[in-house]
Image (cartoon, rainbow, N blue to C red; front, side, top):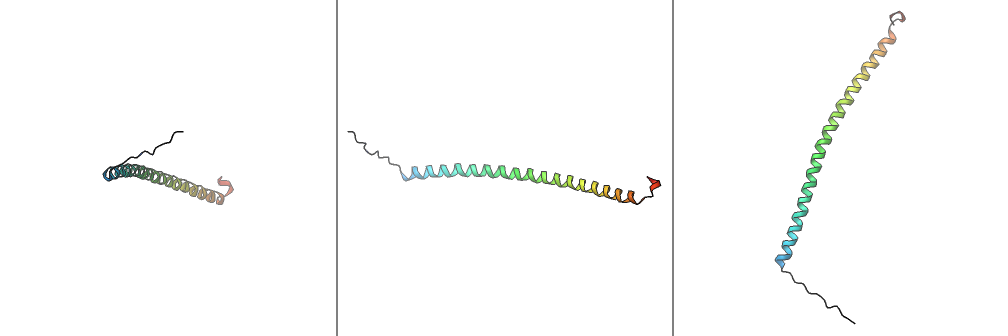
Length: 81
């Protein structure tokens, strides 16, 4: 029967803090990158919303014109058609 002896590993407090700092810096960099992507996406989405708003306004104006033309056309004498 074999017994496993425990392995003892020792680190200095400086080593532990350095590794902890590196991990935090990596995670901070990842968060910053994701935030940058979100900001870029928000800018693109705002532009797309503005474009859609302009298109909807244009469609609304055309519908208003069509409705006006229909109302005016229905009031004209039959001989005018």
